[in-house]
Amino acid sequence: MKDAVPADTALYLPGVATPRNVATLVYAGVDLVDPHRAVIRGTEGRYLTTDEAYFLEDLEELPCACPACQQPRDTFDRSDCAEHNVHALAAELARVRRRIRDGRLRDYIEGQARQDNWLTATVRTLDQRYGYVEQRTPLIRRAELAATTEDAIRRVEIQRFAQRVTERYVPRFDDRPLVLVPCSARKPYSDSQSHKQYHDAIQWRAHVVSMTSPIGVVPQELELTYPAQHYDSVVTGNWSANEIEFVSRVLERYLEGADYPEIIAHVPGEGYREICENVSGSLDREFTYTVRDHPTTADSLGNLAAALEGWDTYQKSTREHRTIKAIADYQFGAGAGDELFPDVATQGRYPQLRADDADGEQLAALAQQYGVLSLTTAGARRWVESDVPTKTVEIEPFVPHGSVLAPGIVDASDDIRVGDEVVVTGDAAFGVGRAEMHGAEMTSSTRGIAVQMRHTEEL
Ligand SMILES: [Zn+2]
Image (spheres, protein in one colour):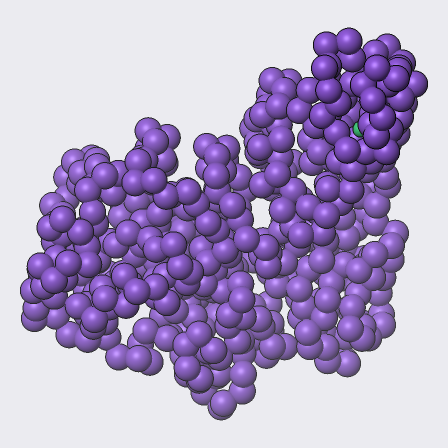
């Protein structure tokens, strides 16, 4: 249904919603529901909550504080039960709306769907229909991503990051040793106490890649890039078999595309070591292990520093230039870093970086909050003229101010996602902005903001 109707058409699913299932229905794409089923179930003597559908006669007390439930149990009848069900549905819907505004409905769903096997199956089925959810999932978000269940590994944000790191990202620091380190609870990693200690031992003589569940591996250039600095996972020291398998696979694929002279695993025991040993075995590459007891002990840090003896330090300009290129690959596609930014000079102090061309004209700036690049029109022109596929929004002949609305759009690239950088072109204007809709939504909608413009030039 969602694929068959325009994106700005509301989908109404009558007679199905209950307090327990409504969050999952909305997650699946339902826009409108009604209280009919909640009322009918009440008149049948079923008392609905977000986790159960009780037989009213089984309840010694009413597990709710809504107005209908403010009475003694023995006077509470089936019409009160219907009233309670409607309240419970309304309260759950209000929670869902809040979660949507916060960009955190998925976190809630992973818990709420557990209340019923059919709902759990629905969420898993949606995860398997990856394309449907991927198209509708923003590239960047302000919200924290709570990775608290095994389902988190299947999330679009997690899969997308792993896919881009292994398929688009080009290791540019593989002319020095690789140091694998454990992630830190504090994000970005480089702000954490432990990573500062690793840094003191490494002194820019190696490429640092953090290992983490559920994201996989995070090269140092992408530590700000969503969701690398936005996720929070549950740390118990015990890794599940699924986590070990997922991170091993990502690390293996990452290393297949790199050519490091040496691999140093500065990781504690537990899952980290097991993953490194898996990958070392499957790739037939030797890893040097530098940790004794714990990664931040003086012994371990001393081993790490000693393992890097003889290697030169990377210059600041080299690091920053390669960081811009790495983010460009991640964001725009394989090869984008070299195509768009072969010769740039970086300005500012990380993470407030900008990239200028040889004449000092700004091409892009690093948006620190999401770890992605914001292009200028000069940067956008380089993108259009490059061999890297451009995400383009073609508009009617007008000059957009602030934003482009859906009705003004003639055509849009199908692979545009919310949060993507897009080039906006028309007979009257050329510009660049950030997508507020996915590509198909832009062409099928008749209302709403499609692109938030950053720079526009009148032609
Ligand atoms: Zn109630």
